[in-house]
Length: 435
Image (cartoon, rainbow, N blue to C red; front, side, top):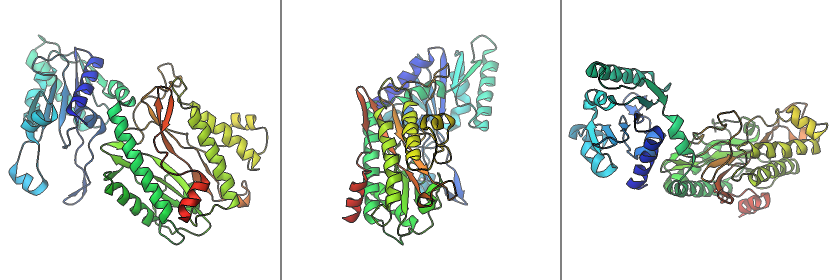
């Protein structure tokens, strides 16, 4: 991502919050895994969206209209001894020359300079409810600013959650973001193809997880967007199954929900396929129903449609299909209104996708109505069926879990399925596994 793109985003945020406001956005912190070892660092999405700055503990301050520059960054100071142990640091000078900061200071100067930046502003946009320690620090800066100005200069009295404005910007992806999401989708789709080629009875679920992670990392997506789900047999009926410690058995299906993260942007793909490479008749009947529901949901994902429209389209197909297969009895429309599908399909059909796998953005307008889809938005479309092992279900279908998920970009004239490279047509899956 170019420096000009980050500058454009900061300018858009400054315009939204107005000339009397100030925004404070903290970077992520390093978190300890165990004594002397940290978890792999992943930058806070809001901070990365605005700055591209890769280090922990930094603070970005956006001050619209400030004469000395609207973007002030506080970061770790250069420290040759620490850099010998932990790697190079960018420092304040590098924040200006390489990351577009108008001014940059070390974190040691934060408490001194922040009250000066707050003075003269009437509204403060910052994280609220996420970090009590950071919020207490903000209150301390505000108190210092009031004490220093003694009422002669405004100091923010109104605090607004930064996401109110920033997340609306993040919801609509620009061309640079879409290019990164396409690449994340391509890498992840090829990973799913590799798993179909590798899968066989007796293989540990963990082996497929490791294969997917390797394929992503080898293609440039070092981090996963979320912990992979590799669920063989009845494990697929556990929506967020992540143990991945069973062995794949002949005659069962395996559900794989996995996506890589490429330069901060997530892919989210689910495919379900037979462990031995051939669908049984009951498996194929349920699979075809889920695929029909997904295709109906994708078909209505277009500008102006409700964000709820794909879900409703999928529910209609699934309910009618469950009646056709003898799993539900009664009038399909009545059953749909009653929610009779819920024992077999208990989640929604999609969510926003972007820097976070469950990305930011409101699903409803101010009046509570479902908002309309717009070009640049990206959603997942992921209907499923999960058959419990009980008397409500014909024995042939018991213990089968199926989900099919794609990433869909809303375009000016319809949609684009970013993850179409991962096979989902059953004949194509069987042919790939046979090869």
